[in-house]
Length: 488
Image: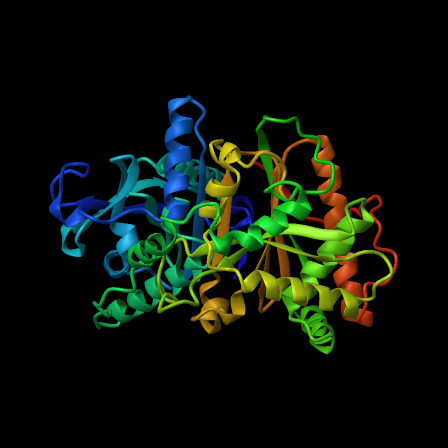
């Protein structure tokens, strides 16, 4: 399972059917007793506020996160519909609408038994290209942070197979929710298709997690000692956000259309050897990759000290591993990657930097942002291109043993940006990279060169246990290995 643009997914032509969520209760937004006392998380509050403000300024911020997967054989439409409804009923956050209430963002969950699904046949396609274009546009139209429901569900049906899709607003899920979606929907579908009944009990609720988090951190102020790690980072960095150190050709205050591209860095065998080299240096594979990123950025003219943001899953606390929600805290990390160090030395620095970051993981990013950079917090986007690194080993997700059969993939889309974000995934087929960045000539050159340099560097680590030479950026090779690019 990996992440790449929906435009790159081959979906065979067929008949498109959607299942639309409907409420049998009073209209959302009325005073409902069962909605009292439920509030959005810090992540959700900021996300909703940005959507409100951008809509009010006639400058809408649009994005979605989707998952697709395959069903072999003729689809049992009734079984799939029941499995989708069961999935939504299990996860309280998917049954929520959000609204501004008393200055804060309220979260209104509908009871599981107040929901039903209605099927709608949308269209039939005999062309994969036209079908993909339809789905991309469909997700853009259907996903709206300010409108319920906050996701759409459907399938492309063929006589002997089907492609199932679910697309979400970020406010109800994160990247690690996607393998949960696939496993639960497919497991329930197979149970129902074979005459059984899916497990009815609710999953752990993200709303409970949000309530717990707000209880711990809503009342802190800028003098709280738990912010000392952030303050020390800001003092050395010079500002709250760590800048992406390479030229992307962006103008201050301007947002741009995006390029969404994905490519392979290592195949399965190379990834195994890369992991072995990292273990021999007393490091985990993501540390080897992060160190390689730091060295490539430095060789391209970046600083010797790597500073960046790194999203970290918060599912490890409590019983949230099977819960859908936005369980992500974004933290600053820094370490020395200056010239003259070998792979083992850089790995020691990465390991120390990561350990220091994890020791201070509890403070929510949005709360630190609000308290320590209030002027930038008031803006609708990060102020400039920010250095960002994300890594997920999809092989460790529950249900990964079925991924070769289900062929799941995650797809991210955003209308505009002012910088670059890169996500890395490891699966059974190797190590992969998905980047979204501004569509400027400078950014295309910079990111193309950077990705090729990173590919050479991680392969050097796999071959020799070290960074090797050269890793300096030059004209990228144009070959079958180069990324596929999609203009957003």
